[in-house]
Image (cartoon, rainbow, N blue to C red; front, side, top):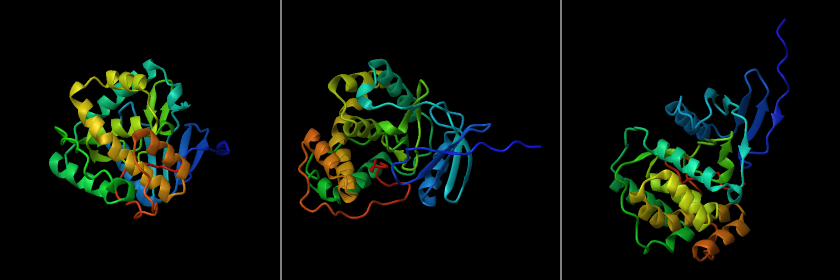
Length: 261
């Protein structure tokens, strides 16, 4: 007689937008339920990256449910990460960004469209006159939402929650990660040291305020006023007087972030 599956345990992750459940197995799995369009983007990313060490293996995806292998481990608050951790994370991101992909457009076209998207929102409008980052030498698969909660340490880093993944500029992942997690100068040096690409550093600096503004607009639109204020202060951006910007797009090219955490 087949044994009964263990009862699922609810998880506290998911940013409030998804219901996550852990089932002990065998095999142990994470069941994620929520917006079918977002989960379709995540499933596509996980299929594309199948076999790569930086993602949990995809087991099944249908409609509003996505099932992956439970890799164990847990997120670590960004300030608690050691220099060794950050160098390891930087190396993992460099690996991700060097995986071959068919680019959907030229880097120049992508850069122009992406900045136009960001600058159409309230906080982003104030940055339209700032120096733009140079186009990337090439586009790649990016995670798109590198808040600390989306990096599970097992003990090495595994990246989860891929619903905002897309083909983009690798500097976006690094700039967003450094901006929204409040990285110190030492943390930045460690991460970039692990990434080992001196040529990307200037683009990361140029992308940082634009991606911070995008996060600010998202948080304001979802009632995360204090979090938006703290980020605005840290990057020197004035909060918009009207926080009710246009709704965030939900397609695969959408701006990054499962923000409400």
